[in-house]
Image 1 (cartoon, rainbow, N blue to C red):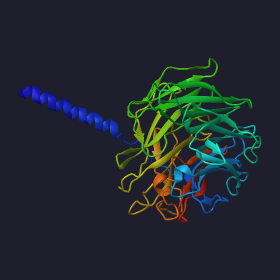
Image 2 (tube, one colour):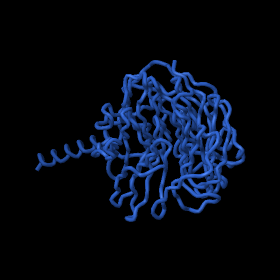
Image 3 (cartoon, rainbow, N blue to C red):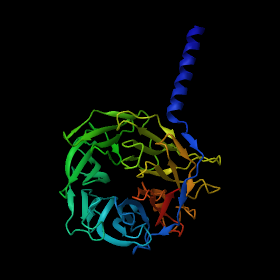
Image 4 (tube, rainbow, N blue to C red):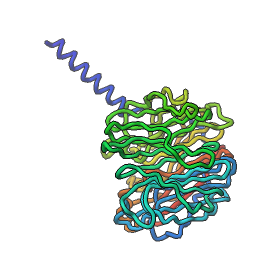
Length: 435
């Protein structure tokens, strides 16, 4: 009887140990180098200066370091942020110093942008023209000059009932890929992949059946051979990818990224290394900020060395040394042309009471094996819960459910985010060089 009790206790302790290991991963190795050199914070002006601007996204022209395209949501009613957002896009031709805004009279959620080397631009959005109607068809705007001027007609991709939830858009060579969650007749939600090649419209090329479940997703990652790594998440199951093969127009089998599906602090993000000068070509990186109840558990990274087939165990990359608990929120990831991995996120490490937030940025020079200490990017900390922000500060505490990060042809990184240093969420951008 005692032996059985001992064995049971041992198994219980082992179970707890395994569960704790799964729920609280260790940190990546520390690289003590200091190669991150942030530039100045630059405000991105908007004609909607009396409204909060949130959830910015950004893309860089593949061949022109000075050409940037961004978009964001304008919250026109601070007390009803989910029912009052309209769309604005921004283009810069001088590396982010000055910007031209286009106000799109479309109302809904989730802007996303992408730029091709031929100057073609795409902007995806969920919503309807003229007013908010609680309907969410996928709308894709197109531009022939990189976002300076937008074509008069938009492409509308309808879905069943509620439509879609979320847009994630990437561009590579002459093709755009767009992922979304589309609600189906079984009250579940499938992950759907759309493709647009050679200036043609978007068409559905693959999907992952939710089988009645509500799936989640993030942006796909395109590899140098043209294959597309499509991520899918389910809160009660796993995180996995399927790889779409354009040559056969088929999806691969499922490859598990993690058996720990925790999310909780903004959207998960994915990026691939397609850098011409990289030692880690086609490595794929998956990043998320994780919360357990009301407490943050930091920024987690998994990566794949074999084009998405197998994945490393998740590790934390938020290597602060001040002893303060994590407040990590809304991470982003991208890879520059030299294979340097850049990860940004919001955190409360600079504030004594941790109620104010800053943007932090960390890099890996060795393909995700180790990371440098996070560098503070924001010059001013800001508390999102202000009178001017109203309920926006509660719904979008990190300035949105995602922030923008892109790599530029010169190897630098461009960040765009929303903070309330002025008392109201407005857009800021910063160029970060690697020295």
